[in-house]
Image 1: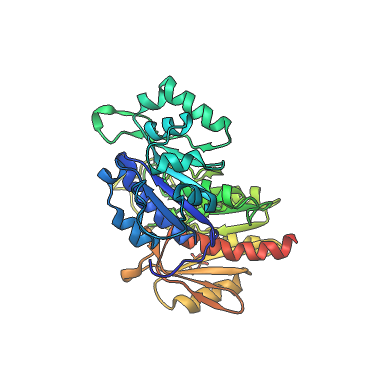
Image 2: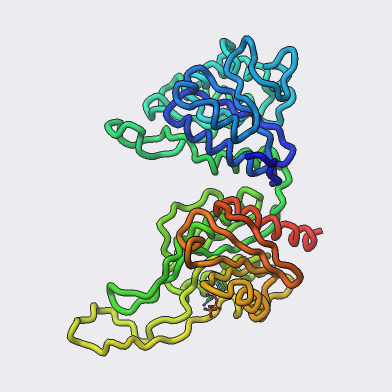
Length: 412
Ligand code: CTP
């Protein structure tokens, strides 16, 4: 990444300490997310981390050579005569991800026998620790006592996740490193004590809706829900009180958001209306069905029954409906189009009384539906901002930057 990205963590100096475990490769993604957020990232690799990951990806992503040895220290960056001391002095936050039982033990007991452990000896709290280890090790009294000691000193030790272990025979249990996105949110919560969406109640919708035709069949669309879930989790990390109203989506609840699962457009309308009364903003990222079968059957229809034509009726246009009595609340829509993307999005912006709309293409090479990344345009009354192809989590951040600006004007 050649150019320094601008984001919520712009100008923040972070140290990413990577210890050695199978989760070490995930810290490459964490480095990438921190850089995309605007942070300066200095990586420190322990000797065993270097058995799992190469320094090069970190160097390419962060623009700085990872520190690997106590003597001599490689690379420049913000190090001085006593590099472990000056680095911990100049860092706004030290993150250890993954943190093995070994580095947690050394940190808790004050052992300094390599660069990372020595750095931690002089670190000011809170250090953000993302543990990753075998569940039996995590549950052991020794590790739990060390974790308790670190927490008592003001450090933030995240709970590891539950899931399948790297080696299938070890089964499932608590010990997985928290996902890089969750670690980023925890880092933001430490580094940005006054998050820019604090005080806002935000309703986000996500996913497709399903309109039943009979007991086993329905009309739906290809929406995965990834965009809405990313918005909900980012917004929660930025201090908003988030309610996520989601149609059927195979995604886990985002941390920090209240989730209401619905099926049909009618259920989504009801759920959104219930939350809208005391909300400050709504982002309609859901791909709501425009039509539903007029006469759904509770039974499974038989082949011989006919007729083959399914009669459809309109669903409520949730955005347009709420737009009629919006007051000072903020309404944001999405426009997923196959052609004339900008013209159609602008038409919807005006017709639905929106503050801004996010336009995507849903055909060809840049098909946004179901994808992890997409190209988008953010359009309001006065301008059209074209964004590059961005991962949905990053795009969510850009959309929320706009929302935060509007929120600052309203709440001040
Ligand atoms: N939307 C809604 N309720 C509906 C349909 C859509 O609130 N019943 C919202 C979507 O969540 C999205 C925006 O309206 O934020 C635009 O959705 P889209 O389906 O593209 O627009 P439509 O108004 O349905 O227009 P058309 O289908 O003609 O393109």
